[in-house]
Length: 72
Image (cartoon, rainbow, N blue to C red; front, top):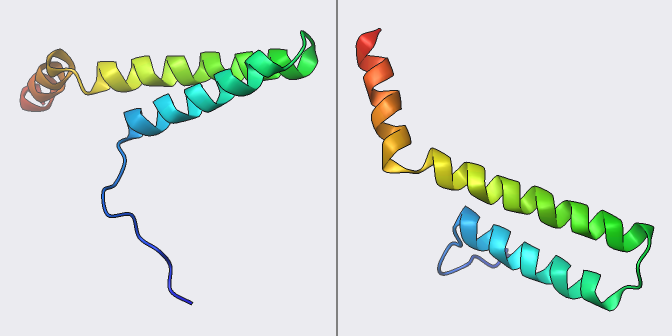
C-alpha cells in the first residue's frame, strides 16, 4: 500500500495554528471542568511554542547566532 504524500508541506506555524483552532473549537463545546482545563492548557502550550518559533526564526535571532559563531 502506498502512502499518500502532501503536495504542499505545511509549515510548523501553520500546523500549530490548525491544532490551536481545533482545540479551541473542542474546548468551547465542553462545560467547565477538568477536560476543558486540559484543552486550555494545551492551547496555552501551543501559543508558547508559536512564540518561541517566531523568536527563533526572527532576523534578530539569526544575526545574534551568526555573531556568536564568528566570535568562536
